[in-house]
Amino acid sequence: MKVFVTKRLPQEGLEILTASGVCEVSMCDSDDTLTKAELLKRVDGVDGILCVPYDIIDSAVLDAAGPNLKMISCFSVGFDHLDLVEIKKRGIRVGHTPDILTDATAELTIALLLATSRRIPEGVEMVKKGEHGGSLWMCGYGLTGSTVGIIGLGRIGFAIAQRLMPFGVKRLLYSGRTVKAQAAEVNGEFVPLDTLASDSDFVIVTCPLTPETQGMCDKAFFSKMKNTAVFINSSRGAVVNQEDLYEVLSSGKIAAAGLDVTSPEPLPTNHPLLTLTNCVVLPHIGSATFSTRGAMAVLAARNLLAGLQGTHMPSELSF
Ligand code: 8YV
Image 1 (spheres, protein in one colour):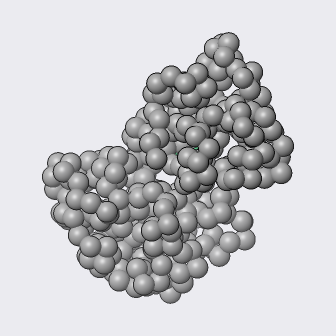
Image 2 (image 1 turned 180 degrees about the vertical axis):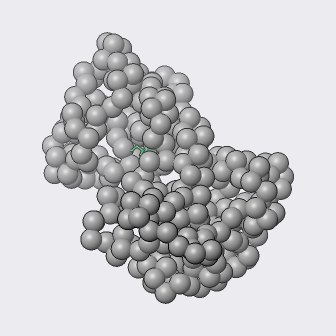
């Protein structure tokens, strides 16, 4: 069987595939995202694809792969890059990498929140410029006694809430499709999205990208936030209307934003958000620890092999 890996995979995952004797591996030996044309060419006739969130797997890709395609393995927990309707129609199985990246992503989100609220990148620049100011100079916002609102208290949202508790957060609000039993462990209060926006000092987005959440954080949402509030997104860039975010940040209608995800990625270097001192943008590094990326590669490889062989998959997506 033939498989195509769309991006250079950490060694431990690649070794599992090559040593399996189950498949012939062709890998795009680059860290760049493939163009659509290249992706269409490289999947021709494969039995399995191991892909990253930047590869849009739509009917064009499925057609280009052809009838042998039986397995798509995501090097990600997120699967918003897949056309699941088309994939299901063709009886193709899908694997992904939940759980193992939860801690790394939660840690990064806390780092981004603190970097944004305490203006750390700006402070580093001040030191380099030799600048120093008065008693309110470089002040930011603290977590102690604050209200934090988490949009989407799933695995990652919950792990963030757990890590926030020792900071002395006063109220932990969350919104989403359903009340979560686990929320009691972090004193989470289920509230409508509007209440979360208006009552939170920190808003953190960790929900998946779906048709319902696409563009959800827009002008109407931001206008309900406090002008001292900090907005953090570590889910998917498209949950946010970036033009609206630029507008509220540049006019001071909210205090600051920290984004680990943008639309597109990478963000063009001339993007208006990058001109703002109150916006901290990271290059989608939530899961980027050596051990997490290694574990993701191993799981994605095991999922792929199971899908090819028609056996039980360690982490199969049900859809
Ligand atoms: C990416 C992510 O997989 O898991 C997800 O959904 O967005 C990330 O962990 C990672 O950036 C590799 O492309």
